[in-house]
Length: 179
Image 1 (cartoon, rainbow, N blue to C red):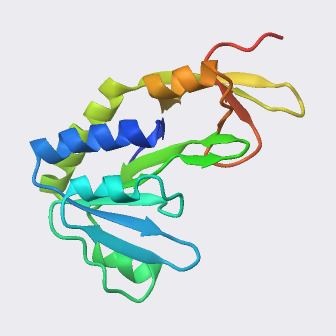
Image 2: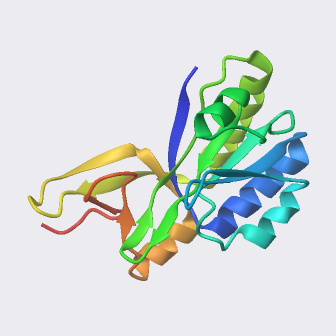
């Protein structure tokens, strides 16, 4: 079953949200990077994230109910060895702004899905749904309630941080843009 949530949040907020989940459930965590080479780094405890949270090369957090299987032959092998994971693609801070991340799973396992739905409900409660999507070249715009943002991101956006979709050149705005 595919469950996906688009999220714009600071790494500090994500750390706090996942710290809360680590206290609720018996979870295992791993950090994932794709460049300069694919790597999965299991964390002995979630608190180890603080040592790595500012390193931009960590692109994802994998969460599982069993230890993340990490000795593997590349990305596809690692993904297939951890099919029930909840994957958090971290929002990406770039010079041009903050690109949204994704939280989701493809798990079919009932036990995993019960926990993942609870984690996702918590993310929903900690974030706000809905942003304006603006095409910079044409000026076309529309409202999407599929993208969620955190209070911290809302404040940074008010201070001038540009928000970017997962892919493409559009811009995201929390307030309706002036015509």
